[in-house]
Amino acid sequence: MNNTLRGVTLTLTLAALLLGGIVASAVLGQLSVSPAEVGGSLLRALGIHNEWAPADSIVESTLWVVRFPRIAMALVVGAALAVAGAVMQAIFGNPLAEPGVVGVSSGAAFGAAIAIVAGVAALGDGAIALFAFVGGLLATLLVYFVSRANGRTEVVTLLLTGIAVNAFAGAGLAFLLFVADSGSREQIVFWQLGSLNGSRWSEVLIVALVTAIGLAAAVVLARPFDLLSLGERNARHLGVNVERLRIVSIVIVALLTGVAVAFCGIIAFVGLVVPHAMRMVIGPAHRQLIVASAVGGGVLLVLSDLLARSVVTGGDLPIGLLTSLVGGPFFFYLLFRQRKRSGGWA
Amino acid sequence: MISARNVGVRLDSRAILHDVSLEVRPGEVLALVGPNGAGKSTLLSVLSGDRKPDSGTVTIDGRDVGGIRHAELAQLRAVLTQENSVSFPFRVSEVVAMGRSPWARAIESRDDVAVVTAALEATDVAHLGERRYTTLSGGEKARVSLARVLAQHTPVVFLDEPTAALDLRHQEDVMKVARSMAADGRAVVVVLHDLSLAGAYSDRLALIAHGKLDAIGTPSEVLTAERVESVYGLPVDLHQVAGHPVVVPRR
Image 1 (cartoon, helix red, strand yellow):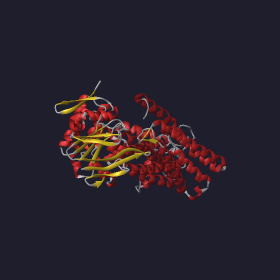
Image 2 (cartoon, one colour):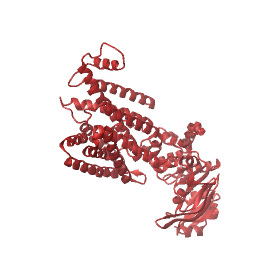
Image 3 (tube, one colour):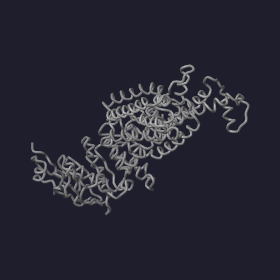
Image 4 (cartoon, chains in turn purple, yellow):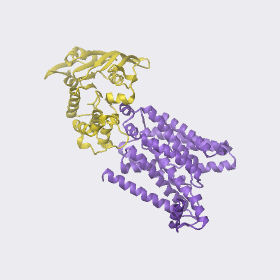
């Protein structure tokens, strides 16, 4: 298959999955709503009067207060995490780098937990996001400077650094759980598991805004990311200001991960699975890869969330549990395959 | 074109390079030779602007190399390094096209396709265009990387041991590519270990030993049996083949 055909196929597949996922998510649940009612309600919101729109105000509010914000949150958080993964892999020069695996997510969760326990969270949604961003930024910086040697990151060093950062952030979270009152304790547990339950439009707006900024910045940097895969020295010889690129990228990763974690907790492996799958279909060139990852991440989380809230009747599984359940074995597969091919991941 | 004056580099208070002065002229192939650890690669990285010398100056067209912005320097000089792994499975044609990125916003970008095609052909890798770089053999990777450097199309080209991973024929091919770049009026600086190869293809030869410039001149001037013996600590015989010096260790 040639490149254009692959691109078109991928776009169509993702669009179909996305549309199906969104409709299914809006329709399924404790209160069943027909697809016609969903379409009608959407049209009415756009100012077009029609006969499919639900007459029942409970249906209307279920859609607009509960289901739509949750779907929108899944889309933007999935996009944020997948783009963060793609950017991280580009600057680490390693396809195993992922915010969850190397500890950026737990750093952000630690930051968010501090905000909750210290009572800063009362200042509003922005405060938690800010603390999560700072936590994520510190973790990214730490991992970056510890795990790099001679301009590349060896997989062993990367994973070991991830273990250390995860352990430290885990200990910090445990300590906060220990000192927190029972209300904060529940909130922190929610962070550790990850969930899209109870997403509000105000939160969706913040995440969407940050994701849009991060995505735009990553697309602008796509060409330098391509050149960086030649190694740092070669990228510099081709005119890339590597130091500046690194710092900007680290801020992008921390922003995207921080804002996702702040409102939905730790949802691991999205940044690993999605860019990898996209790379297999359309190749490693970063402009297409980053855009495709954003869409793919959104699709993955919409579908995962649908699964999370429909697999147990009446229950709502944490989505982070679900992504790790799938992502863990996938990570093993990647490690195994790479080791078989080249005897390590240098 | 490039001028180094009294260049010195220290690492942990040990002098890696000491008081090296040399000129690189347009239209010539200048070979840097010398024993392992003599400072050839360090000299190359100082000349190419990768590394700031601790003393002395390096200028390109009269301007201090350290003061030129990354993007502009990339239009002036290209560097083939010894380490050429690529982190993601890009196609060979994509890797070579990356060499064009310094010209992305310049008028020269209209030649991109022609330059990339010519570079692929000159290095004998046109048939690999659609292959993934990560699946190539060592020698193929080395040639593709050379094609990338060729595609950058700069007035100065630095090659750090471009023949290291190559078989006899491809070694000759690479040096012919270096010669044809010089014939285009470009300056080529190449680090080599094979003295006979350096003798056959370079206009001038700089012999580096213990961080100093031991001798510089035409191959016949520099490659004398006494000098090679004293620098490498090995008795050698010197022959002339087709007007070029050939160095053979006395066994």
